[in-house]
Length: 429
Image 1 (tube, rainbow, N blue to C red):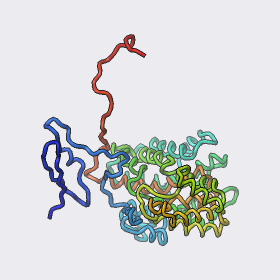
Image 2: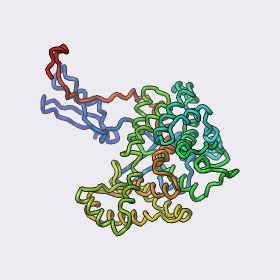
Image 3: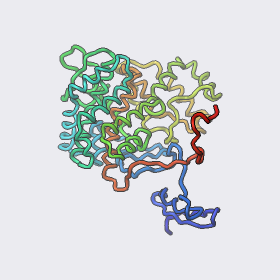
């Protein structure tokens, strides 16, 4: 039996058979459904792209109903336990786990490109001391386009790969400089002898010591967090990356646009909102009252529920375990008890269970970042560092996808129909 969808247009009585492939019909096939020969054809109205597939991708598989997240087929749980961030970044970009020589070459190329042009530093010195880190990061990444004009040759594979090395390498350096700018500290040059996350901690926190040695537990915890945030299918920022680069814009302005999308509180800033909520609750004894206010519609339960997941976010489970490892080094964050009590109630209370409000990736990540002494203003920057690997992987995939065209959604026009121009002196107030 062929996989088709039969649609009957009750306006005309005509019947149409649309092909189904992997549970998807092509939106352009709706165009044949017309009320009359001059009709444009049927369109689908889908605000927020809730039920629209904009591309085919082999990078990230996300099954929200079953709580499954896989990169290139590998379960996120296995990658978080056994891999490193740069190894996962290689997997996202190339499609396979690297051999030892491939990983060695990849790490060398990325770490080699962690250095910033001195004029980039001068550019960043122009920001005021209280400039928001995400504004600085978006602006600086966009400015890299002027330093690397070769990046405009997006049709050349070798040129594209060079930009991948540059972006994954330099994003961590830029991120650390946004922090040091606000603190009034001198910028710290990258140390390519350290791991990717170890070097980032070095650039963030090194002061007068001759050589910075990151705590291995904290270094590993950050590596795990970077793996978990590396890619997440066609979210708001990834969609922005693909949409901008569909015009053949260079990857620096495309990543800057993706980071701008990430900067919004509904996307990359959610863990800040969780911390504000936990601080507002203050202690475990205040949790029941807060839950009552949530049910009454007076407050929101931050860090629970997800646009895609209708089950426990698999990343949240991993981050929860990582938090305890971090606390053994930094000391226990007292807000963890508040978080655990909120989670316990939400998983047992029918109000939250019926609404499928499970903890998501943002619920525990902020507690770890706070314990590691990252200021809340830089939380979204910490998100942008690993997500850059996902953005460039999506970009590389898009560049060889023969079906992709410049992004150009349609609209339903609801404005005025034709009107005649009225001279200024004849217009009424």
